[in-house]
Image 1 (spheres, rainbow, N blue to C red):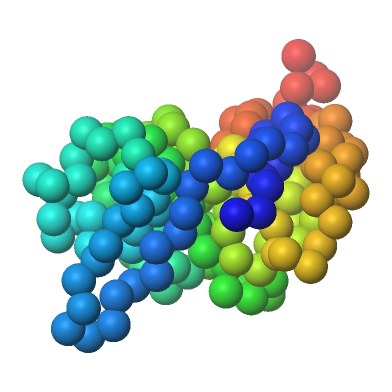
Image 2 (cartoon, rainbow, N blue to C red):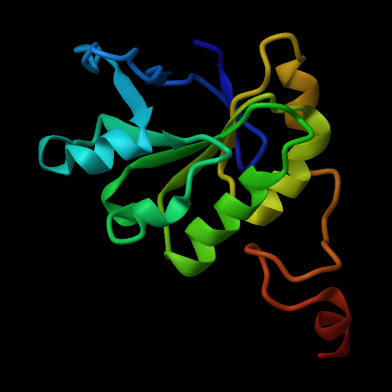
Length: 168
């Protein structure tokens, strides 16, 4: 498992294993000794089995509708959003919806094709942790996370734009 970067730019051990979607006819098998991230629709379909388990979280693909988690969002210790390509920006919208519309308060993680120049934008959209693409330098990325002390626009981290903050 690769390490992750947290919201403050600290590198920490990743405790979560991403479980791939089972092939047709196969069933989902969870590791017994690790925390597991399973596809969100499978968690919703079998929520009685998974609800309340602190070692089971979900992941959403960029084409998944986050509304499927609306009434269960805060029952999950971790939601990960997959970025299949760095140019696919749907994950940013998913993060904002989870935070602002569905009130998700627990850890939100970016996974997949995550690059260091995206981290600041991901943070502003509500992500708490970042699993970089394996070929990228995690130390360099961690240092770059907090390059900017202020954002101009309102986002999940502040609902007041800079010009209004300056005026007050």
